[in-house]
Image 1 (cartoon, rainbow, N blue to C red):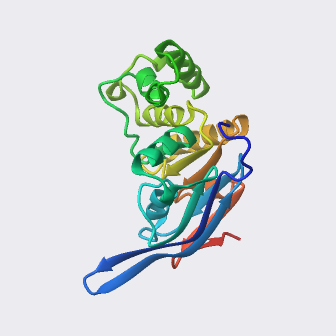
Image 2 (spheres, rainbow, N blue to C red):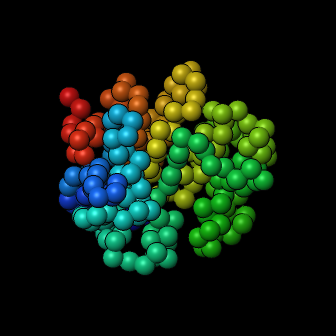
Length: 232
């Protein structure tokens, strides 16, 4: 983990988000508190439109709350510049989305190496070596030189997971990572994610509609009426 001195990876305090609809205000998040520890796996479930993606955007510093604070590895995201936020995201966070968002003109290997190259602290050779190792961990060593268009949906999502993990982030945020896959492929991706989370010292927050998968995490929370409540 890139920041082992911090025992808390992520903390949000009284997080509130409102949107204006004409003269009315729609309160999507209502004073959410959340603490994520090192290596902890947290699932967030909820109905469509309940605010799950909005919450992830706030946790990543990609949007600003109406009230409240987000603290990532000891850094208050709302109190730094946009450039500093970007640097904190690159150093501490990984992302996996429902749609993989791979760069189509680059190979799987080049896509996975990209977060390391953006840091400018790792040589191109070192980045390629680490990317090759991570592709091996997700079972895609033989597909490293293929571009996204030459990969299946499940393979593209494996590349996205490898890219999110290659820089050894403290926390990976996943927004419906298997929502665009068929049930069989989604099940394989779930098994891969569980396996990787046990091998690595990275924390995970996973937004998912799959309750069975959510219950296999360390904690499962439901976003309901703007609040997070434990799933019994």
